[in-house]
Image (tube, rainbow, N blue to C red; front, side, top):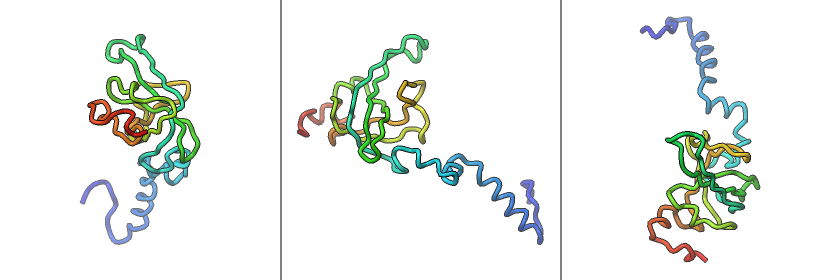
Length: 151
């Protein structure tokens, strides 16, 4: 038997109490029970679409060699909730395929945690761009789609 749990005929109440206490330990169940998931701008969905307000390219020199380079970000206003969020633009030169007032599709990265060391005055970066004007980012970069074909 083992596992440091009581066993026997009259231990049901004790086992139920242990289970009830330990079920609060995982972060996701704690968030659901305390109703903090309403602060999520995606409202429990995996993706959300929005319109690009501005483009931000930031050069990182002060952080040392592994983080040297530029971080390409876009400020997006979501359609669903009218909130502004920061999203990372993946791939090298990905910011060249995005203009202001373009429609983008965002997805969550790392279960709502920050991406790397990117912090900004608008908040932490938890999302990345997947599509621009209904064309995938990787398809645009590889040349499979024309950037203006969606207009």
